[in-house]
Image (tube, rainbow, N blue to C red; front, side, top):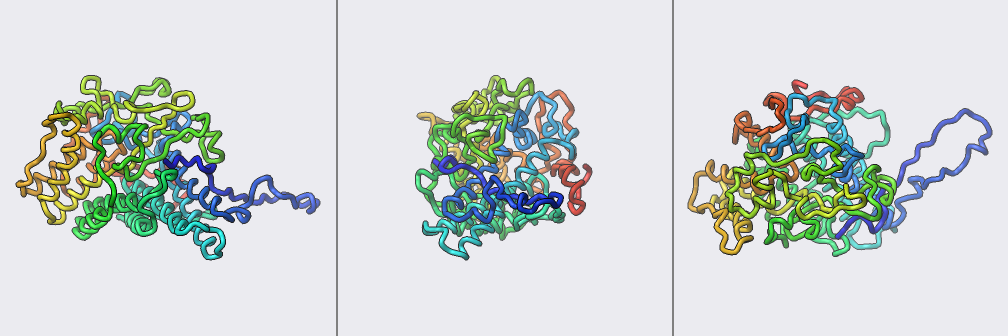
Length: 502
């Protein structure tokens, strides 16, 4: 599998000359100690490094982050995960634009976007010049990878912030003030990126490169983005386009064992469409980022929030809500692989984990998109676009059958009747199945609740967010459907407007 360790991760560094008072020009005319940009990007190997550098940007989101892991940003807001701690993403009322995790996520997303834009510029330049790429189609694949990763970030930025600058060109100066987007502009750009990526990327990579984005990755995320846009804009055309994107996915299948989707020993499996590749090239230093040399900094993920790990240093851990535990049929084999029914301890990722270095960083890949998610999204698209209800129910039943078959002679969860034609009923089945199947993963539950509310499919004000912090949970529907734009961004960029009521 691809662990970014074939070549040291990193983009070519751009060195900016510093102006000094005039003196002896000969003494000032010295070569820097680092490779200049115009001396880089001259080989296929260096182009590969540039692309690995884009992937490496995901580590800024998933790593231990020098004892400030930001996972609560996406894990806590829904009704599947809770905590006894006073975290702003749990209680909502304390969430404000000064939040450090907010700024970390926002900055990490735009760093990755800028890396993608640099890579796209360089691929275009060296392709025009010729003589750098020798492997057939690799330039196309590199373009596709950069577009896929940029699309992923734009998709996430739209979901969390709604409005943020759409940046599709390389940033070359600090003096930039791009305006914040409006409506679905960020999501629209994500869809454009993913459409292009799906046409550029390969169906699969060699075994040594497993984990790199494929056309299946792009079509899966493209379909997901189209369903999300279709939900909030009530666009039947988006649902139809999503179904078409999902239909292009080939050669994948649900894993027989649901737990393999969260096992370090079963990464990049047949159900996985895209994962962040957590790995340990040597000593994993969780106190240093990985931007300059992957043998110095951390390249692992972090799942300590779910296991009350010592590295939390007194911070309260995250655990499953009673609501989630009670939503499962007690005989559903997914329950003990999701959370302990008695203690509410979350088992995803930590049950079949492996640690690196000093035992803080995890080698277990965060699964960003998997086929079960796609099947349920396709079922939703069918229901919302006047498609076949029988086909939609069959898709839900595929997910339930996989779970049931994990136990010989298992009876739960039972299949739904394909004779049902009431679309509201089927939609409720889909909502419930997404709750059970995708709980405590990529924060998908909160994103689902928000879009279903905006699309008029449910009323989020009736949702029991099940906080166990002891602090009154105050979800304001006129405020908390979006996160605030980080204060630092507002201060630096007057053309970016703050979200309402922050």
